[in-house]
Length: 425
Image 1 (cartoon, rainbow, N blue to C red):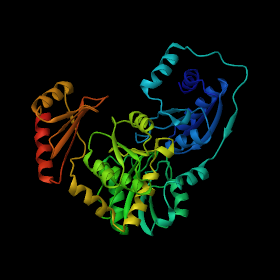
Image 2 (cartoon, rainbow, N blue to C red; image 1 turned 180 degrees about the vertical axis):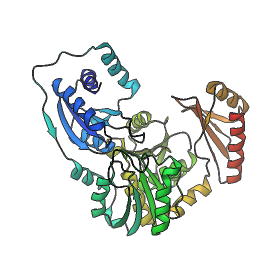
Image 3 (cartoon, one colour; image 1 turned 60 degrees about the vertical axis):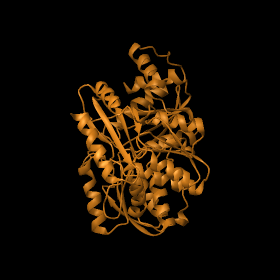
Image 4 (cartoon, helix red, strand yellow; image 1 turned 180 degrees about the horizontal axis):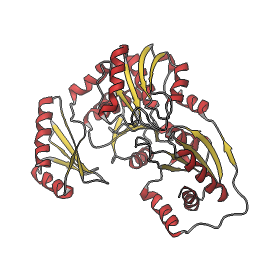
């Protein structure tokens, strides 16, 4: 299948060169070999960047001026899973609607181009040094003060990159599960699972650290913990990154998703930027960023996108920007976050399994018909001092709820309970 994916990708994109990277999973090397063979047989030059994070494929595709890139990874899934993430030239994402469906058809029908006489060239290329230099363009290392940081690599791919950054940054890194290990002996690298957060929390308390950061397997997402070990909602990280970026680049546009919005809008206003709403999901955010030339886009799901990173998501740039913001403002992470939480408390995303999700959505819309509606993604209903967003999952019979208020935690709790009662009733 991997061999055929290469041939299907070649027919769909007409690429002459492609960057391939892979994560630590046992099956990744084998899939990479088959993918490489499929491209070489199709006359496509392959630049193999080896074991890396997804963002290095995004970076490498643009930096090496390749016609496309494929990352072999199943990110935060269990070790027996694997998959691929696809981009074309300039690291433009290929989603199901913008090409994967066509590649699937080509493979299903065996509708490949005839193999050319001349094979492609194969090159191995370590771009780690260039990538570290690239990361250095997003923050000012001179502005980062000494601090102690717990970093949890989850035995995924980020460990070697943290080793490199440690040599540059004035921070003491307390490393957890830093060695890439395909068996994930300490659990799957998914900090969204609450029990997976416990080692990070424990280490923060034990070492009296200033903050903790944990990554998923292919490190395109990072998750933050404050100095007391509190897990920080992704929504407020979007606000912090918007603030950090606008301080250095006033007047720029910031993209956010519709699930939780008020804090981001206010931060942009206060810092001289412009907030622009987009449907959630990487393909939509990246498309909107290109459309309005936004400098940064953030989703509460811990995906953070940067214009100067080929409009792609990164799990390392947010880490660097947050430690710089803490240093510049002279505030702890909890102080920075609590200011935002007090202004705009939120429920976080709450999932409910519903037999007939579309019918339930209609029922809720009828109940709150007197609010102000927005349909950018699912349905958002605004009452001025509180609002909620309801979305159906694309893949499961699940409804996702987010509630926020203007400075009223009790109202947020009451409205969350009220809505959950209706959704699950």
